[in-house]
Length: 121
Image (cartoon, rainbow, N blue to C red):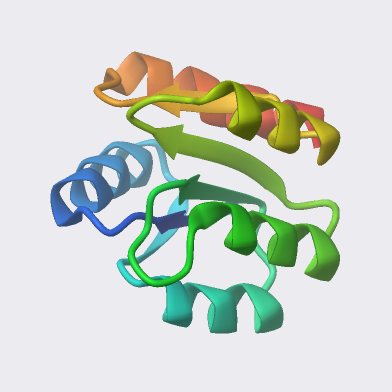
């Protein structure tokens, strides 16, 4: 069965880049561009891996990450961000998240991070 991956990022170009790269690797990929929809989806659907941008309009990515952890602790989470602050790294570490993609990132970095995340779930 194909692994199901969700990409949550307000930047359409990032969502499309990730979706194209992961679809080529035979993953099932869904994308969401707004945080409110993301919160609804993660509370009712299960994904193998969710990539979450920390800087989202309206509701920040950390709130979404906490909701994912409450709903399904087995879901692998990858944080996407332009910069990871010390506070964000400390908070995500407390939640057991160690997978980060710092923008801009390469396809190889994306694929390796997703593979590592799937292996460590």
